[in-house]
Image (cartoon, rainbow, N blue to C red; front, side, top):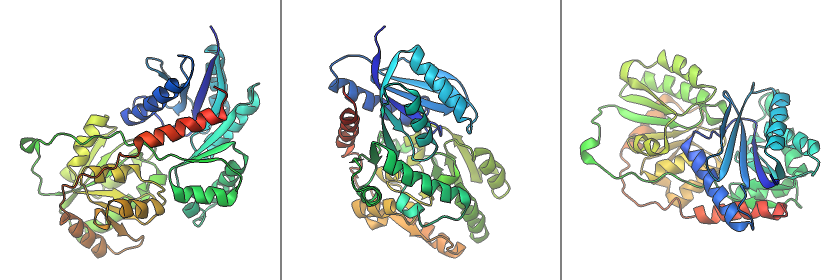
Length: 375
């Protein structure tokens, strides 16, 4: 069995899941584009993720490996990663670090362990220029230091916005930077008027990874304050993550009966259906450089209430200020209530072309891997 010259996506934080249809669809697109540009028909892309289960999926052009390990046990993760590469005779030409923090550390160690010293591309999705201004604890200070090291010591950086590219170049002027936003794979479902559920409550959605970085603590605080102001709303949550249990318990103490709905991790086709039924979408990440979730909401003509960030302002500029209402942190319950009323008055059937850059995005990303490798 000959060695496979491969791009390895290293996801030590466990953000990618082969069973999540959106993540799977994106990486299949990457894999197909990569294979079409290579002279061989060998599998050229694999994804290795930390998970709460062991799983191997080699059914398609992209191979997904999920390593069961404690989220802080990098030694076990790297040991099992090395076994995967060795057993499958995978020659990692490029290691893609899924973030400039834990995954970058894992990528650097893996590069040292491999004889051929593969190149490292660090992917940055969070707006580091905003995070640098908010160092409220030791963890955030350490992350700031580490991300600066990642920008300086990696061979290439992938970012999701021009604003973030400018920040990376301000840290390391000679760094190779590729701008490639996350492709949107969500499609607008066909309308069926008869199937629309009648609901007197305002549906407020919070979809995505249930993680502190995505604003779970802010969601709890906003719901608690809003509930003192009015009770004509329900919170609809879709996704999974480390804060899932925390949200169920905490929100369950505030909202009863039909005012709190947990949908769990949705298949992509179901995501579009449930997202389209929302009246308002909350985007509460403290920093957003692109905003995949809010763009998907806009695609389905759902108004967004979001904290101000570079990604939110960029989306406003692209799709109109009325599509996203800015909520300042620390706003009063009455102000939030007024924003919800304003959002409810937002009615449009505009055909937002939020997917028009997908092909260019995929092309840029795959070409960046080819540039690092010798395929």
